Image (tube, rainbow, N blue to C red; front, side):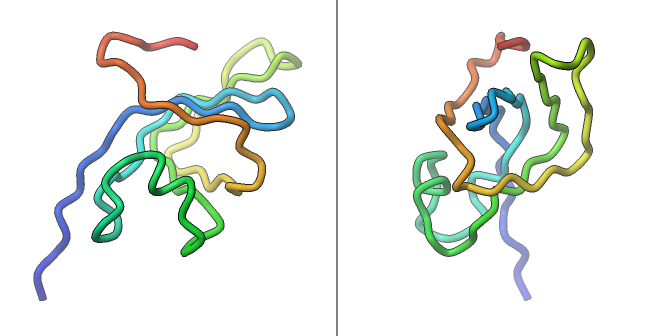
Length: 89
């Protein structure tokens, strides 16, 4: 069985509670879904699977780091690809 090629893209997301997340997402997870907007808009899966995620919330002094983070798409206000040189929101 041939394994799918994984292409990670750095992204940033804002959730309805104000949390902002910097993370990586596999853009080539499903055939025909090769843009962040395709994945966010897709009804195939209710969650985004993020890796190396840093979550920033106004109530916390330090970001929360997660190797893997599942985000419910219904809680996303916006999502955008990050430029190569962007590290903070």
